[in-house]
Length: 187
Length: 70
Image (cartoon, rainbow over all chains, first blue to last red; front, side, top):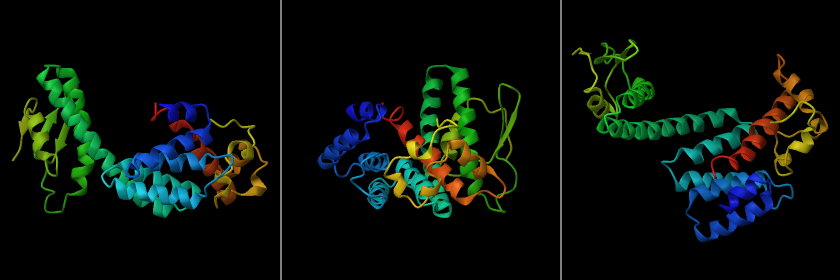
């Protein structure tokens, strides 16, 4: 990709011109708005100001609400350029949560594929990563009434025990994956 | 990665020099002369802002061209 090569060569003026041309063709593409805002910040001969870069990032967030990239990029901007860590922290929290969902989704798909292919070691590696990530998601949804102990105790091949409460958006899929390896369940 | 003897003004792009985190009176300082007071307790506010601007944003954006787009 030309933009990538120009960016690598630190020719941000030409890279910006390239992205501007692409943005005219695909004005609804959030990623192009992020690239544009990033390149504007790297200009040695500024043709745009930082407010325009911020607006482009805000537009990217609006265009692609389910994407972590735009939210995180705006978070970086608010923290470093505007020195507003309080505003940035809200965006980072949102972006991290969205990215975690995406990663869990990908790992669940990967685990299912490894299970089909009988690649047990890779399957277990994915499963452990899913459990680690999903714990944060499930933990945030837990209430005092829910705090009655784990639904499942899972023993990993290394002999470590993982206690899990199966709640939240991934409970059913995790339950399905665990069915291949669960050693003990408590009601 | 910025080196200790890099001058802040040579590293920070012109657009980012318009940021409120940028302080012209620190522009001729080296990275080391900025990062040490930025890490002090209490930190030098201007140095901390310049370091964030210099390191966290400029380098991160430059590195985006090497990784995510290729």
